[in-house]
Structures are given as structure tokens and as C-alpha cells.
Image (cartoon, rainbow, N blue to C red; front, side, top):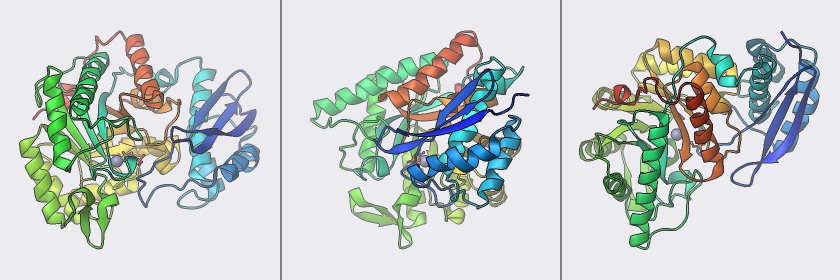
Length: 413
Ligand code: PGA
Ligand code: ZN
């Protein structure tokens, strides 16, 4: 196994124009590079990013010193990083420093084995592309609260391949833009590339999205389903969920009732963080009523932590987990959470953050680990398209979409 010759950290810039950490891990005959992403609607239980200059310094001093000469084995490198940091939230070295180094190690190891990362991680297992969740309207913390719900996404449940999902999404994205333009509501895009949501209510966005699916020539609910990320932790204040756009606030029961009504009226197949990160009782109640019909996803609710997932399962919360490497801090901990989810019978979605770059590592993790779904934002802005396009290259390498694509199986309604 190769030894780490050097580790280099540097400051680069993300899709919001914010500084972030890039790390390079250098072996004798290969190297790997990765960039830390950044969230805007972060969960309280997330690993903490620190000041970027300090994080870069930590890579170039403490992390370099402890990894130099060490054998590159992902789990033991990640264990070293966790011990060196020594805090429960990785705030000493910085989650941004740690995740960049951890991912760079994965790339370096794959390069040393002369394999693409997805193949290196997948070994001899039969691999398939994940089903994409693609944003059409972006709201919440990604659009200055212009609408309250954060993501209005599509899942092309009837598509036969990843490539076909993107073909369909392109049509829906354009149709949604045309509808907005016709009404004089086209005002650019939000942080993840979805259209700026110039709507009068949260429900209007659902109506427009359903309309755009039809306009594009697809049957809502049959060909294409809707996925929402409520990101409800962001809405929680003083014991209620605030819908600022509609000038009203809801109890957990009222939120529950509203979401059930939406599920009845619109072709919704998945809802992420329908309740706040603290609200296990409401999450469990919602999973009981809606979980048989739709996917209930925990993002801020689980923060990619295996312990939280297992605790949530005990309480009957959610049936799917979002996996974000920077939320927990290392590649190995992300993998542990996915393994726990699989064992618990939960679904899983590898996800990007709202602050992203050209880094496409997460696509490789999703394919290599066999995670069934992928969420990287909308269908514009190159930090998003870089990831969709990387998935297309992998699909081609796997035989051009001839393999079974699990969309229909995952989202029977
Ligand atoms: P974030 O949003 O990266 O701002 O946390 C993504 C999400 O909530 O899924
Ligand atoms: Zn989320």
C-alpha cells in the first residue's frame, strides 16, 4: 500500500464566491485532490467548518505532519484525523480541512491503483447509477427566504437511465423557465441553480412545477415525481413553523396536515426534513402516516451520523437518509452511516451542499458505494452540471445505461 509523501492545503473559491479549502494528497506515483463544500441551511449536529485561512494552515502543518509517511488506508487515515482533532464536532482542525484531506486521500488511493474512484470503491461489485433528484425551483436559505420551502425537485421515476433522466429534466427545467417568463416572473437563479421562486405562496410553486412537467410532455406522477426539501429547521422559531411568505405560522400538527394535503394534490414522492432537527415526535408521526406512500428523508435530522440514524430508527423517524461527507467530516464516517442505513432498510441519497465547486467526488462515492440516489442541485451552473456530467461519463463506462435503472422500483406510488 502506498505511503503519503506530502499533504498540501490551499484556499480556493466556491460557487457563492466564498473561500474554501482544497487539499492535495501526494504519493510517490500519484496524487489526489478535493475541495470542501459548504452548506447554508446547516444542521446543529454538523461537523463545524472553521475560518478558511486557519483550516488551510492546519492542513499545511498539523495534518501534514501527522499523515506524512503514513500508509494510505482510508479508515486509518480518517481515524488519525479524528484523533488529531479530538473534538466531537471537528472544530479544532475544522471540518472543512478534514473533509478535503479525507476525500483527497480517496482520490490518491484510487489513482495509485490506476482506477477511477468509483471503480476503486466499487471493487468487483455490480454497479449502477443512482437516481437523480434535480432541483427546478430553489427557495429557503438558498433564495433569501423568497419562498419558505427550500427545494422543489423532480425525480424522473419513469426514465430508463441516468442519461434519460437528464434529457427529461432539461425539458422540464426549460418548460418551467418558459412558464415563469410568460408571467414576467423570470428573475435568475438561486444558490443551487433552480429558478428564483417569485411565487405568492409555497403551494403555487408546486402547481407551477406540476404544470412544467406536463408542458414538457410528461405525465406527473407516472413519468416524473416531485421531491421537496422543506429544510424545516430553518422555519422553526418559538415553537412553530413560520411560513414567512404566507405570513402564517404552523404547529407541527398543522404542518403535518398541510404536507399530507400536498401529497394528495401533487405527485410528491419524497419529502426531506419535513420537521425540525429537534422534532423527533413530529417526524415519527409523519413517517407513520406518510412513510408507506412516500420517501421521508432526514438531512439536518441525521447530519450523516450513524448514531443519529440508529436513534431515529428506534423512534420510527424517516425511511431515508441524506449523506453529505462534510456534514460528518470524513469519507469513512459517511460510509458507516450508509452501511447503517442499508442494514436498517433505509434509503439513502448522496448530496452536495448549496456552496459547491467543480469537485465531483460525491458522484464517485454514490456510484462506488451503490447509494441509490444522488442530489446535487439544479440543471444550471457549472458546479452542478460538472457532477451530472461526471455521472454520464460513469454511466457510459458501465455500458451506456443498459444496466437496470432503479427509478421505477424505488418510487412506486
Ligand atoms: P445546504 O442545503 O447545503 O445549504 O445545507 C442542502 C440541503 O439542505 O439539502
Ligand atoms: Zn436538506
